[in-house]
Image (cartoon, rainbow, N blue to C red; front, side, top):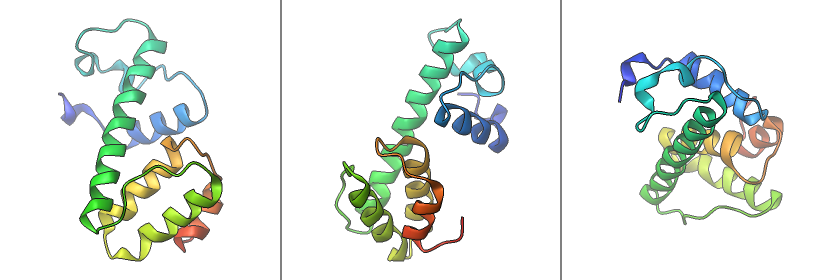
Length: 125
């Protein structure tokens, strides 16, 4: 994988776009080496990358929860999300906090405003 071609800005723009339901025309989808087998359409490239990023984030998030002996599951409702975010943050694991923020902001089936997530994590948005 051509990870050296990927920038933080590209990932951030991509995540914001897919979170808003947009097809991403430039940045990450333009890196041909990310697609094996090759993918031609912008729409399909966006979907392939979104699926891959979701799998990476979910695996890392679950791993981080396991490392601090927290149960691994995906909450099914707002109350469950807020409780899980609250549980993720006082554990003293920067990795867990980061993966939790990424997962719940961009990939959780239960979508909440960033302000609600920040309040549950006891951080400033």
